[in-house]
Image 1 (cartoon, rainbow, N blue to C red):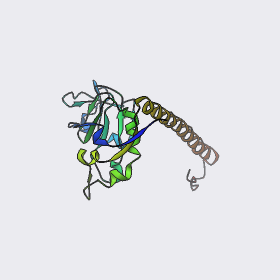
Image 2 (cartoon, rainbow, N blue to C red):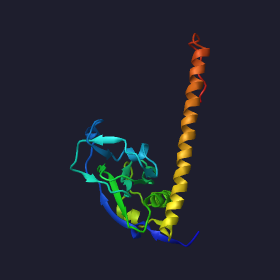
Image 3 (cartoon, rainbow, N blue to C red):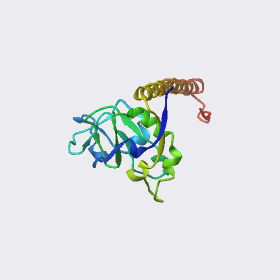
Image 4 (tube, helix red, strand yellow):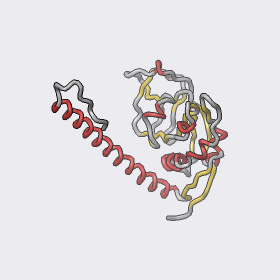
Length: 200
């Protein structure tokens, strides 16, 4: 319900960049939570509510709740057409991460979903051949649609997050069933070395 408006990303906040954080800086028992830019591709979706990695490095850039994180390089243009809203403060953000700070009248998780819905616009602004790049100036020109009312943004984002949680639960159940199937094949045909398990 209510009025929506079309805006450029650059109209909704300001930018900064993460600082150097190598994979060697990731330590399981580290003092600080951290995000390496490569983790944005494989570990996180639209909303980051639980940061996985840790480091002892504290000279980098720290997150503020509601920051939106973009990887700035990848080997494929589609890999750059993504962002994640981080809902934790004081997380060390590594180099290769573009950090968007939304203004107060924008709900960060909603912006993340809205931006990720505009993948084609982002891909069209990617540069490079072997390694692809995107920068804050190009991302600022991407157009999104946003409800005027902040509470409406929150309601929509909450609904989408609930769907994501249900998808994750169903995926876990599917993975368990696949494991059970593989175990059954191992039990049913233990002596047949030539038997090939059909693809799941």
